[in-house]
Structure formats: C-alpha cells, structure tokens
Amino acid sequence: MQFAICPTYACNLRCTYCFERDLSAWPMRSMSLVEVRNAFAAIEAIRQERYPAADAHLILFGGEPLMRSVKPCVDHILQEAEVRGFGVEVVTNGVQIRHFLDLLLPRREIIRQIQITLDGPPEVHDRRRMFRSGAGTFSRIVRNVDLLLQKGMPITIRINVDRENITSLPRLIAYMENRGWTLYPNFSCYMYPVTAYTDPNRPSILAEDEVLSELQKMFRGEGGQMPAFALYGFKVLGHVASVLDPSSLPLRMPPLFTYCEANGLRYFAFGPDGLIYPCGQGVGRQPLAVGRFHPFFELWQDRCAQWAQRSVMTIPQCRSCPLATLCGGGCAFGAWVRTGSLMEPNCQGSPRVLDRYIERMIPRITQAAPGR
Image 1: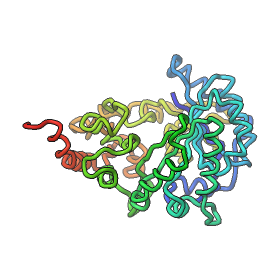
Image 2: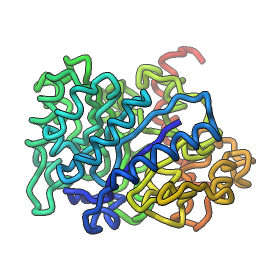
Image 3: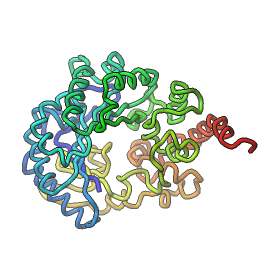
Image 4: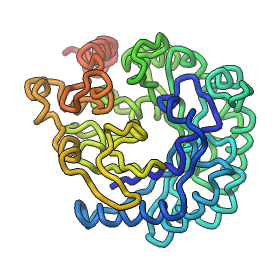
C-alpha cells in the first residue's frame, strides 16, 4: 500500500505545465504536528481495515514538501515513518533539498528514493521550471543532485516530456553522462509524458505514439533501440514493447485490470485540508476525497466503493474492448475531469497509439523473424 503525505499544497516554483497550479497558488499553510500524528493514526487504521499484511510505502508529496518553511512538519513526518519502519520516497523539485540533509542523511536506511525533475539542458529546463520571480532553477538543482549523489542518497531524475522539450533529450542525457551521474549506482532516470487532464487543449501535449516516434528518430532511427528508461511511463506501449522490443524496457509489464494504485484503493493521500484522497493527481479537489483524518478519522464508504470497484470488468465500455488490459481503463482522475464520472474509460487514443507503434515496429519485427 502507498500512503502520500502532502505537508503543504504551496510551492516555490511556477512550472508551466503544473497540474496543481490552482492549489499551489493558495496562501502558505502546512500541516500541524497534531495533523501529522492524526494522519499516521489514520494510516494504521486503514492498513488494519484493508490490507493488514501489506507493506506500507510512504511518499512525501505536495505542493513542494521540501521548503524550509515546512521543515518542522517534514521532520515530524520522517520521525513517525522511521518509528514504523516505513520506506520513504521523496518527490521534490530539488531547489531547497540541501537544507534538509540534516533530516535525510541520518535516515538514509528508510529513504528509498528522492525524485527530482530535470526537463532538459539549462535553456530548456529554465523556460519550464522557474521560480515565481521567473529565474531559472537548473543550476541550483544540478548542484544539489551532485551533492546528494556524493552523499550516497538514491536519486531518480524524472523528465516530463512534451512537444516543447522532447528534441532536447539527447543533450540532457549527454549532460548527465558528462556530469558523471550515470556512473553512480545510486542514480536512475526515467521520462514520463506530460498529461493535461485539467487542460486538454494544451498544444504541447504529445500522445504516447508521438513521443515514441520522436524517441526512435533521435535514438538510432525508426524501430531502433532507445535508452533503457524510455518507456517506463508508457501505460499502453509498455506492455507491447516488452514483448516486441524487450531491449527498450527492462521490466515485464503484466496485464492491467486497473490503471493504477488508486483503483482498488491501494493509494491514500493526506492533505493539509484534513482530507484523504485516493489519487495523487486528485489531491486538494474535495469532491474526490474519500474521507478525513483530522480532526477525526472516517472513510466515506460510498466514495471508497467507487474507486475500489473501478476496473476493466466494471466499466461498461471496457468489458468489450480488446485493448482493455493494456490501459486498465485509463486514468480515473482524467475520466472524472472529462466526464464527471469515475466509471467512464479514459482511453487517450489507445487504439491509435497501438496501431502506429506496431506499424513503426514492422521492420524490426520482420528482421527478427526472416521469411515469415
């Protein structure tokens, strides 16, 4: 089970594609120590009620969780996680993380991953991920990543990919290699297509097959091999690629009957508004809350049931779709934004994506099976 704690919805950056922009613009507020304790009490109650034998994985999320103004709250969260033996993943923009080393380094045994986003070389990244003043963040993030890698902390670089930065990926990868990051055993990297569920008309959004096509052109041509992390975030293509082009994906991906941990209620996020959410992208959007943890704990069973029951077996359109187990019905949050209902599919062009991918892979497939 995954539990995310958002000590605040505020953020010190103004990224151009942020899906939480309406939340992060709120006045600064962080969880009190009482709210943190109540969040962990709720976590224990949920574990006992739903999956008592499951391991618990804690995600420090936001807004931006690693801002100096939130540090006392973060310290308390890490203390509570350490007492319970929870592994912790930190999702941060990385600009102030050096001010948290006194909290993170002594607890390196429970820190499973620190995820930091880097969207391209300096001139590209700084157009996308900037401070409120408009100043860029690339150089500060790079210095902090250098420091964390040297300290032995597990660092994962996330690259959010869309039309505005995809052609700069080879330069970013070369930069990371020249910086020596890829030589560290505690370094990893992945790319993820930018989604725009709350702003579907953004012209920079690329479909999975469009991202894949650009990657194939950049890395050794159509149907050629790409970096090992290239398809990590691809829900539809990841399954097919793991069979047709295993070298492009180090993981074998099983059939999806649900899209993610939110379906089946294996993910719970706790916000500074005292509410519990089943989806990281849905935090702060109160119609999606499934309960509260402060000032008292309760789960709203009718709302929980909607998320727990959502699968390709219960969404009517998915039951007859031959591609259902490739996308798992699609993102529930995206379906809710688009239709107002969780029980609608959110296919995002899965048939088109699959057709285009297979068409591009035909030369590679026929080369692997001559005479067929």
